[in-house]
Length: 279
Image 1 (cartoon, rainbow, N blue to C red):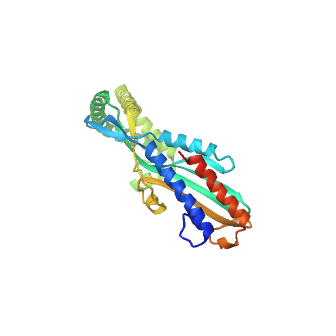
Image 2: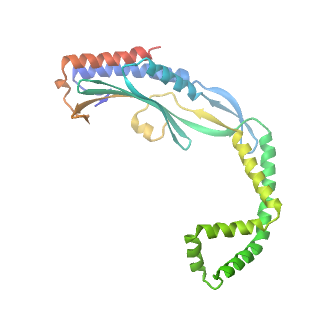
Image 3: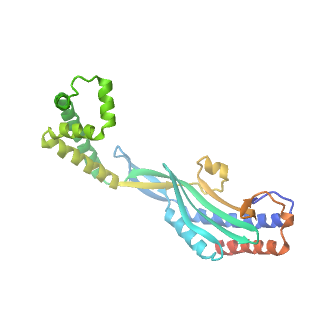
């Protein structure tokens, strides 16, 4: 049973009221922790742009402090999920009272966009990369006829010179070492400049990667699970109450069958979360 819930049961109403207060406080924390600050970045064409970002580390620190204030709740720590530019940082925590399991979930979903740091060396690297790529393409074009000859001679040496193209494909597919040997033989026949150029290109790409910076963006609103799955930005805070029957979780149960003592304990656990999160 998800909390908050629309129910006429007085106990569920009380849980929902406490949940709503916790949700409001959580949203207030998110608003404060995701305040944007301006930062200048560079686009791929060297255009300087002002973006706005926040620091996700602050959210993780908030989660960490919150969990420390809930020593009687079981938690797995802070989790982070990545789906391309969409990120989510969240916590789950739970506590058992009798045969009932109360669990909480808090999450922030945001986007991470890549830009270059404000460094004009980016332009110099891109220019050199373009020049190197042109040289490599030229060398590979000149290498093609020579490579064909080397492969033909090697195949003849192995007795495959009269084999048709389909059969050759099968041979290479089944023999990775042979294919690798052919490639190495072709490229080893080139002059040293090809190897130097390819190494330099790899080094330059590494330099460009080191100059990337992530800009984080979210919307400080409360969303539900459907909107979160739909990749919307925002935060989610919810609780679930489940009945444990033979250690199997049941979401559908009659809250009227919960004893007064267990109800009291569960409400106290919600108060613990409220006290831990209040500003």
